[in-house]
Length: 299
Image 1 (cartoon, rainbow, N blue to C red):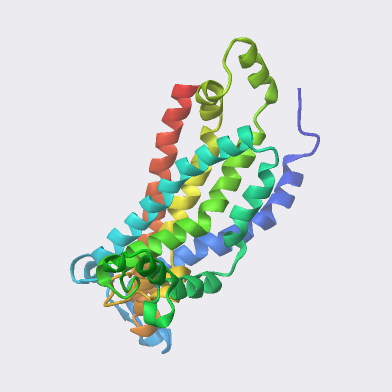
Image 2 (image 1 turned 60 degrees about the vertical axis):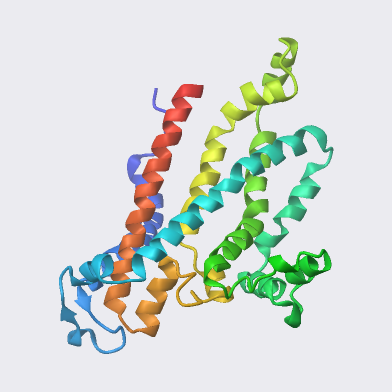
């Protein structure tokens, strides 16, 4: 039986504009970055002045840039830290769905930081992290509690500045992942839980054997979004520390920005951008492979 009532040509006419737009916005910039990454160019002068260096930019990036691999390590830690809160979001979504009559209201409140401008969030947390002499709330609370020994210059001390940024990012996107998990749980068929209740599976037992297996695809979406989004982290870091102090909070995106526009090494920055695209593709494939195995086990 022929399911489609329109010809393949008609479908192609409607799909082609979106496909072309997608190619122009995604694949063309990647190819341009690959091409420019083969040149030594400052991004300002005419491209005719660019010097072809082949894989020289990649060689410099991998073997001669003292700040590159530390920025990669911090970026990966950023990505891993962003995934830590997702199981907590899932647990909270289960509790809200089970025990709170109007959980949507709480989810909306938790979602508020997501809709705020990153500039507002960055400036807010910079104020919170300020020293007591500058009205910093966190240090003020610690001092009031008699824990003055634990006060720090949270975003100017190299050893702890990155962890301070991790916490802000987790706070900002907690409501985002909570909303995804909560919506996914609410959309699960109620008939399955009713049948399980007849068989004696209720409460957290039903969550263990029904909710968790069925929510795996939604959980995977949160993991992928959190991981890939954190690999591309840029705005919050730039607003709060701009990669400082002394490159202690540089991630790949900020290092790429500083190299491209401040140091005027546009070709080198393009090579770094291509590396970031490759990292995103590799880890997305790994995460999809892991969750496909989990899907097969729980199906």
